[in-house]
Length: 152
Length: 155
Image (cartoon, rainbow over all chains, first blue to last red):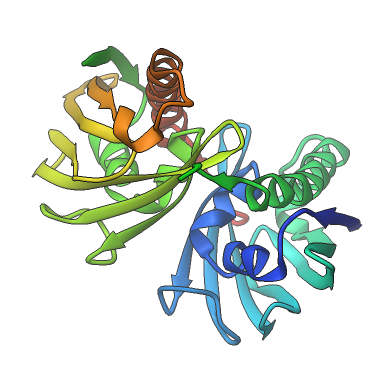
């Protein structure tokens, strides 16, 4: 399945980039993601890997990802590593400056591992939950990046 | 000083609750209005670990600074505030007691929002209420996260 969004954020690219490469924001961007453990620890760079824990209902699942393309203030891409919930998972986020705003395009593609899918009683509902999470990513990224500092 | 306290049963072993409490990666998921966290030294909680957090109040980005003050494995977890940031004072005390049916958690939060940090444009009563609501949701989230069951494709 493919989920795509395009939207504008009222913030410069560097503000959005700071959020994108800070793994501690991942659980805030995806509603059903709980934690993201980076290898190596710290900011996301090209070649970084992460083990992500998520939840659906009372079940905790894992996703293993690597970041093959991390192009400063332009593009962040991740893709599935073997193991975990998904047979296929890829994410691409593109940033383009439009004055003081930023145009953002997000694209996700996912497919469940068949062994997991066999345990899910309602695959369509499960896929809808994942799809909703991926759309929420766009909303949350916009909301977080548009926060303002306290007036000095 | 505002106090928020609650005692509740988590249907999981103390080890599962401890795992959530001491892994700072869970913090943004436990508190609804916290966004991200940096810890020094990196990794699992140790006494003295400094925590710097960003959060939000409405459309505003705010900062918090805390420190892990006390750790008694599987029994007690205490975090206190550091100078600077949104709280003038902050203490979080979580006590765990293992039972046959799970873990009894006693949580106590005591805090005072810093008027100097926010300045004159903010209603301190509203900020205290927002913080108290976050502590209440923290307890619900701690229970929910500690009670999750792992899924295995093979089992």
